[in-house]
Image (tube, rainbow, N blue to C red):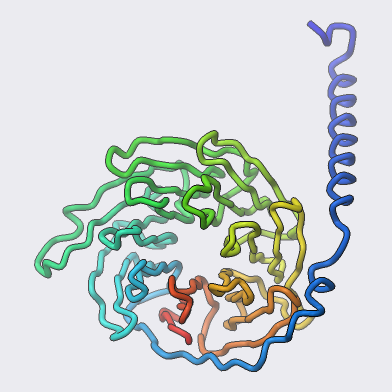
Length: 353
């Protein structure tokens, strides 16, 4: 044994101090790359003009808090899940409900649309992720075709299909993320590293990039390699739970929203935080973030019932949107970038444009 000559506490103490000094050296290396602030670089960029966004549609039908929503690739349909145990597929143009599923549990905290538009996935306090195929046969019993894909040891907090209908990525309150095969329900890869509940995840936008980012109650945002299951980057600058993470459209950065009332931007190539979006007057947490299609705007849904729109480059707030009557829990920009949808604890979803 290499440690024979040392007492146990000595080895632990020396290893701890070595780890701390290595951490310090890593921070020094990171700091060398930190030569200029994002808003300084953006000073020469033209300011954004006034823009008006209004609620264009209100989707009513959930009997309790809306917890999650996702757009279909057809830019028209929306799936939403709620504390009432229902998952509803909406036509956002007409506000009609096209499908509804009642889950065996309340608090359906996660839902996702399959890339093909032919299936949805959802889950929550039942600790699993279920996939339902969608058909146009009005008399068909959707619950009969339900497929249980993922099983966690705690609640399901987020789910997302990869670039095909065949694989699904899940995040859970058990502190792990996992990749599953939809057909067989087999676990393909698990991702361990968070020290507490994982609350959110987002897949890198490029078709080839086999990475995703997750955020959780340990205040950490972690970037993972889907093939190896390894964490390749980790960022810990938030002061509270990270509720939402979203990749920048180019895939070179991601934003996060947290209970510490800030949204932040992390540059993956510089390996550091490059911007903080906050104001003295904003004291409530950010529950959900998403980028406009160009990446110039960051939409943030907050617990004070508002949606703040940030200029990503300049770091300033360009608009504040009112309408919801309770906290905004989920927010997604549509695939063509012409609108975004927000879901709230006031039981409704709103489509803004």
